[in-house]
Amino acid sequence: MKNDSTFTYGNYLGLETLLSAQHPLTNKHDEMLFIIQHQTSELWMKLAVHELISARKAISKGDLPPAMKMLARVSRIFEQLNSAWDVLRTLTPDEYTAFRDAFGAASGFQSWQYREIEFLAGNKAARHLETHKDKPAYARLESALNTPSLYDEAVALLSRSGFEIDPNHLARDLSFPYSENESVRDAWLTIYKNPKAHWGLFELAEKLVDFEDYFRRWRFNHVTTVERVIGFKRGSGGTSGVNYLKAMLDVVLFPELWDIRTEL
Ligand code: HEM
Image (cartoon, rainbow, N blue to C red; front, top):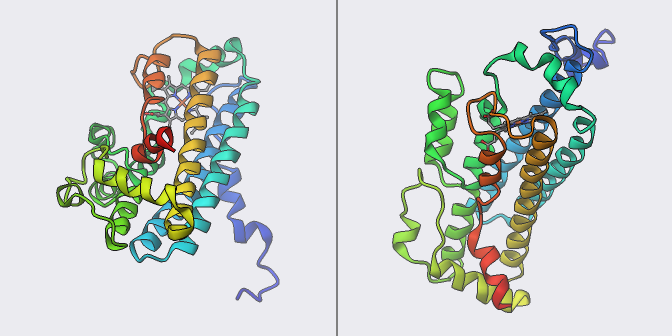
């Protein structure tokens, strides 16, 4: 414990470092909003990664109550990130254009924390590793790519709980995006048809759906804000921009959990 009376709020929170990390490249008033919006998003993503890694570990141990608590927190983090777009939406195209050229090819596409969240959730799009080659985050991302995702752990738990899961699916190559499997679908269907008999797994499934729901909203809010600010211009990271981001809206993290709803 820090009993020293000279230890302050600012020391504890590292505020001198945090509050001196805003370095606008222009003298345009609105660039500060752009920087702080990204920085605060990265801070919340840091917490999301922290929670997701622990939730995954808890699921792997079959310890569901803490896993669900952490997943609930991650959903609230995304809710927070979703509300934050309202601040950025006050940025008009002319205000953005005034400082846009200053940051060159820098792009949220290079956010290694975002990519780690995607890998943790199961969207293992290995091509994104390339962006981080020779960067400090590479090893961490490569490890996340080759480690079971949150959902892989949930599927393994289904198997350990007595559901018959296709062995080939359990032994799948973890570095590929998760793809739908009939045996997993059947297991979730049984659980959803009789939640009381499988309450822990049912609750876990609903927490996962919650997370994906909020994550989808983040993607949607992002692409809508981007269209509002830059229209259909190419992205600073070199993608087609809005069209690339719209394609990302089709990514499904936990496919069987969505699929079974048609039959319930
Ligand atoms: C006016 C504000 C913004 C604009 C115009 C914008 C634009 C874009 C565009 C066009 C892309 C596609 C990649 C590229 O070619 O650059 C992208 C990707 C991305 N942006 Fe933004 N963005 C904005 C705000 C934000 C904020 C506040 C965040 C929060 C961290 C963020 C995070 C990301 C991430 C993580 C990606 C990668 C998405 C993926 O690969 O699925 N962006 N952004």
